[in-house]
Length: 121
Image 1: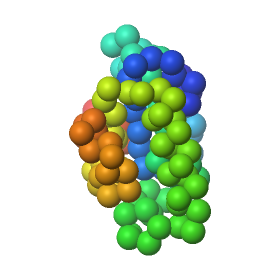
Image 2 (image 1 turned 135 degrees about the vertical axis):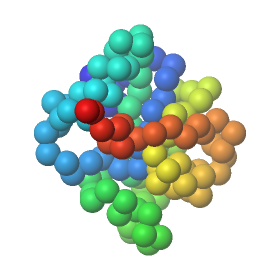
Image 3 (image 1 turned 180 degrees about the horizontal axis):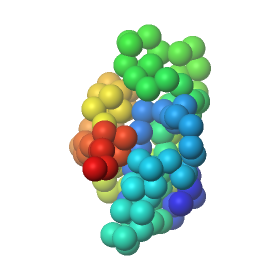
Image 4 (image 1 turned 90 degrees about the horizontal axis):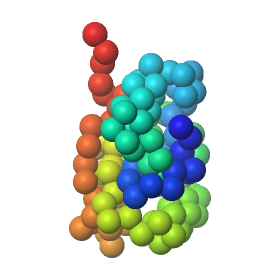
């Protein structure tokens, strides 16, 4: 599964791409992608509000990067093109950013745990 390629009706968004090593094979990502596939949601659209990689939580510090508006425009274009009835937002950081920076979407945003917060035992 790859982000930005999903054609399904499920739209999932995070705050920004991770800098964590491992790519799609990382255990947290693998658990997330495999769960989506098992639940028939392997064609979900996966994206981020801010498109550049950065340390986790960097955007919540309150100072938006100089190019933030450009990233927000790209995100809004994705929403306009796909017209999702609901947007599942991964984690509180992403949810709060979206509430603040895309207020027009507040009625369709639904907060869910970020897959990185889940620990396999």
